[in-house]
Image (cartoon, rainbow, N blue to C red; front, side, top):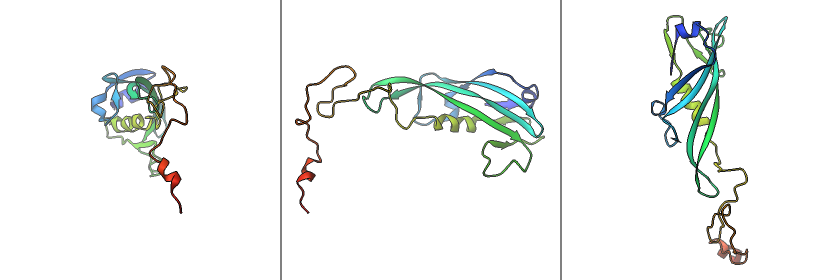
Length: 165
């Protein structure tokens, strides 16, 4: 996503952008739609510009507990400073991007790419109360109850219980 200097100088306020998902190379992340939605505001600072807003998308996910496919909505916050001020530009300040007076535009695609991938959950759940699958018979416990008992369940690791030192 490119922002031109003329747009930055006009101080964009809650402007809606659509970003083609294929342009971001999101790897295994499967989006439900072909575009991400982005709402951006630009503030002028004494040393550059502050670009902030939200990025939203729907993704196809598989629940880690019950293996059901579902659509998950995720939202990421964008907050970067575009500046040529050398005192702000250092390795510790990752939210500052160099933007010199001679540049006509800034491409935020790599920043958006990283923000979207950082929002991917470690554990994907169809709902917080997901009961998962029965470890003995494999039934989805969200849809039905099973008659399995704890004594029927045999783990492949049960043989280790009989191991003597």
